[in-house]
Length: 441
Image 1 (spheres, one colour):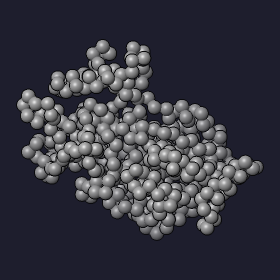
Image 2 (image 1 turned 90 degrees about the vertical axis):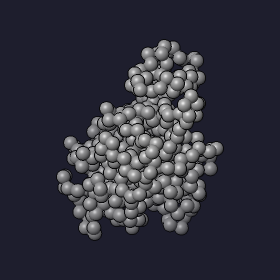
Image 3 (image 1 turned 90 degrees about the horizontal axis):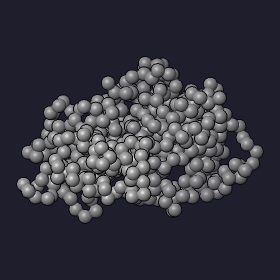
């Protein structure tokens, strides 16, 4: 059963903007926050949310009772009035569109009309949530965007310091700086903000994915910020993965994957030995091994013991392959390797899943297999990743339904927050609220 179809044990509540395919939503709900409202602009993503239990809200601004379908409003967030939820929301979550700040987008930043951070600030004013979780691309840390990122953080700290529509953000930023230096305002209208730069692989996601996650807590709750920082520290590392592949450290990785051909193991071991840092190679490391693409396909976490079947080479025909009962596990023809688009390797975390214009582009959706091009050769055969394989790399459960043609499903996954990454931060937020002195307010 999908996670959003099960009610949380505690009646904490959440609102999700820019919900997309539901990755962050699943994480927030799994941490005990009951959805009061979802908003998403893309029609196919809305279909995905509906397929997993959402129901169009309509025009009625009503707070759902526990057990009711979670309300979905499709359309532009700028047209959404959320004032009816004021004082009822524990967590506001969302990942504003990242194209304005990503290398894959136009990178106009604040000048880009797709910049939706101002809508997050507006939602904070209308809802006054206890906490906010916001994910975005690491491109915001580039020198050209750093001043605007600093402004975003200050705006999130003081969302009730209103910006005149005719005032440039640079000028409003100076106003925020002055307000921060002045007499403290109402603590129920100010937030403590924590920004964390993350690589999803460091949090148990079988994918290299660099992002920033911004979390804000209302000041009147007196959340223990330092404890929160400790609770979101990563527990996985590349060094632990390299050790797990080497015989002198026990070779536990290969015990999980005994079917791996010797020639593949030998090549992976050589890469692991080259990547192992010499200065601490013999020092015990308490971190867990990065998860790999092979781990994801074989099955980890809720998919433990549920390996995805191989796609036969004569089934790259765009037709559903239902071996094992898995959906969206469909072979696709035409994969190729070319300069600048190297493929995924099975014994490393997958490359960053990207949305692209028509689904995932280039090498980000191409994988090397264990099969040789020719008997006795050295080149391995490659193919496109299936949607199901990509969903596993994003740590979506197998029973989560994705709607639309293949390109749209891949786009939704590329735009999503990996569920396991989101869960670390959502669980830490839940813990912080539960233990905060002012949490009952």
